Length: 311
Image 1 (cartoon, rainbow, N blue to C red):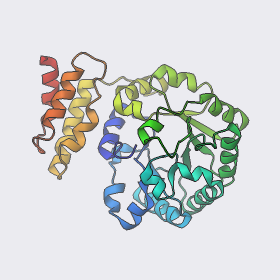
Image 2: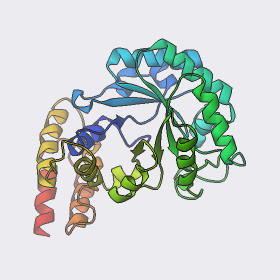
Image 3: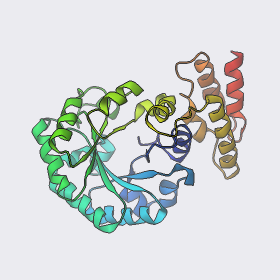
Image 4: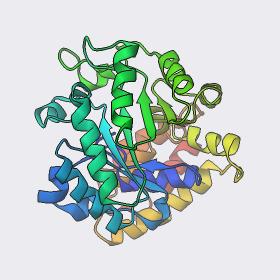
């Protein structure tokens, strides 16, 4: 979820789902070691539990970044070997690492040796023509030799040439059954399923076969699904009110603007809050048309809500 699940998005999602484990957007080791680490690693205390998702292929660099993340207070380190973007491929990490299982195992071992935090992995089912169940199973088995026991499985393969990252999220067929089989054959591993999950009922059905569900685009585009999951799956099941969320985010926005954040960097994450309800279009339109007009408009969410009700 590069460029999507930044700390403002995660704060918003935490309000909706107090019990969910949140993940950062993928951050490269180079960005942390050679770039502005504060920019990429900052998070709000309210986000806990929160996992840092790393992109990289050098065991020593990944270990170094894992130690930095532990010092910063993250709750988990996750290695992404599922991203198919050209930018990631040029750096020789992401989904292309599925073709180098021994290297991935060594990367996981290096991070596990460096920190006391859980170290997990997010992967696909295969890459290009390497897309059989046996290939996936062998890859998972090799990586598990590192001691990693949590695998987040995006239930599609990645196609590295000819498809955009967006197309890679839709075009390759889903094989949820492969993920179910993997859990059956590896009951000692914690298997989390991802890909094509856009309703609470669908998530519930998957949980009959695997240990967890990761939501990606559905949680961003229709974020109320997080509140519904909170109500369905966790003891703290009071369903929040959308208007209360608007007010809480308005208070957050005011604090962030006072510290120099532009309104548009926060409001963009709330476009889908009323998805599927009357007035949703007016809500989106108001935010889209006004977020860039005044970087300090701390009333924008309240005004968008009023415009939605008036429309």
